[in-house]
Image (cartoon, rainbow, N blue to C red):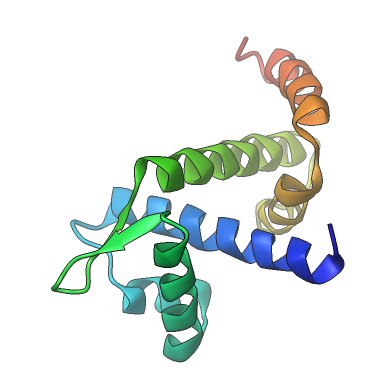
Length: 130
């Protein structure tokens, strides 16, 4: 996968994860909520929403509310799980929580499923969650 395509997939995953997180916090999620949460411009989020919708990962109601499709939710939950587990592990190792979250965000996109599964098993054991 080319670097540009990889970065585009990372961005897509970040948007889906953010919509998931916001949907757990808010009764309804709109593009402006995503822009505010990520610190992105409204036009940037508008383009991303259009792409997510075209790929079948979200639907947008007539009122502008964003909803994850089953496929979008599956991706978002996978990314969110990786993010939270890796963040918790780094914090357990003594990393500042903000740094841990930032680093986990980078790691969650690049690790293979095989390596993540092995790390998850080990991390859950270390954190006493197995």
